[in-house]
Image (cartoon, rainbow, N blue to C red; front, side, top):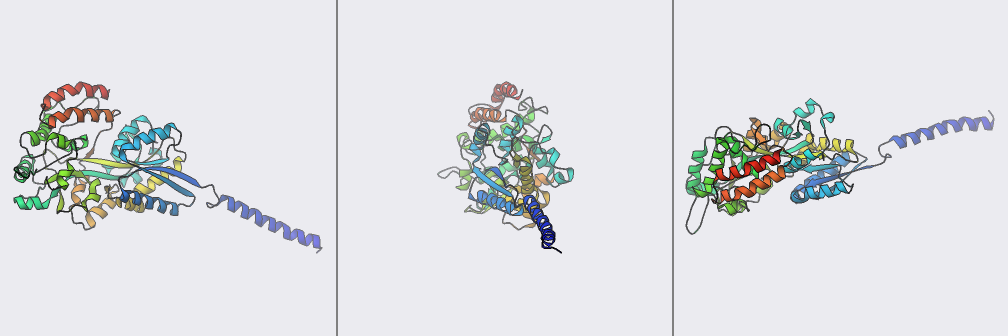
Length: 420
């Protein structure tokens, strides 16, 4: 064989090999253009931020080519920042947001519909109540990562010192009131049997719903306070302060009433399972007790979501991240590490709240979910304005300055106008 023919026979396989290597290098994930997902996260404290940061680093490790750029914000400024970023064309791809943010953003088209990206088997792993809260007008706009249900934190030392049996599932509104009276003390050192937060309607609704009252009618176009059931529930809350004196004055209830509980000036304070991180910091003996039963056992719930921005730069990748964080075992573990609520996947909730030993009755938070009586605030377009109106106009009720019925009559047409 001539030198030219021999060189030629070596050249072509070598060229083929080089071409193959070039094709493989271009198509391999390592050589593909890296994608950076901008994620905006509502986080209260270092524990939550650390859990999300670890989750995102884990996701990057499992998904080469994806980089997550997280930005943390507080709940109060989240929406203002998001609107400004969207107006400036620098909106995030995905967002970890609270129920109040979902209520405000979904009706305004800020969230990407997700129905085409999930199937029935995928959704069935979540608590049904959590999926229900993830829809607006029938469309799925986010995936639930954590859920929070309301229960009551109790100071066991104060119960023991007063010789009062702990609140339990046998207690109704009358026996609950009787216990709060025994826990209340006047004189040089004031002690209340119960306190609650009147500045968010979420903290009113368990009482309303357990008496078969409601916020709005079935069409969500009218305020439903002017019914015997709703009026009775609102009057019960008002009477706790203004007739029975077992809860603090109204100005405290719309301020920071949890301070009375944590400073051992109130024996009970209702809160959601999003407060789990605070339990370890309490200096007295504490446990979780249920709301008193009434006509049903409904408990208010809130949901915390992973949503994808409607104008996301990388929607498919953002959806994949949302699915992993809210649905996978690893993602749910990181969300639970925030100590901000109950895993939205039923089997994960059972793992952490029932199968794991705790010093507190965390299973009480699961009760309403397990009996399908956990209920979230309804999503209406002007929710922020409606809640602000209700809180403002009812403050004189909790302070004993105005009757419940008078305020309900005054605000009903104003709320109805906002619901149209």
